[in-house]
Length: 86
Image 1 (cartoon, rainbow, N blue to C red):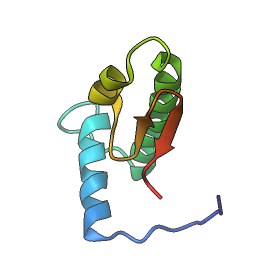
Image 2: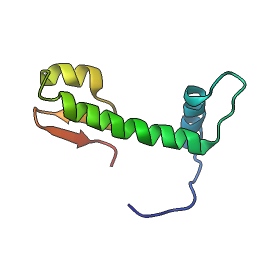
Image 3: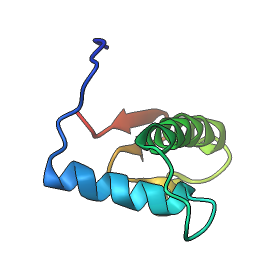
Image 4: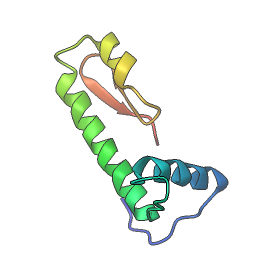
């Protein structure tokens, strides 16, 4: 992954940041910095991947797909996790 120091804030990205801020805010008056939303999203992605890895042999593929697949990452067949983002 390349190191970049700036993000272009498209309307869609701003909307996602706003939604993330609402999720990670301590209360209605909290306005967390964007870095907190980014950190939370990265942590969630990594933990979701690990959770999928851990349960793919315990539950049927259909069950895992139904409850765990997202638009970013999902289980494909029994033994493979697939990134859908790029």
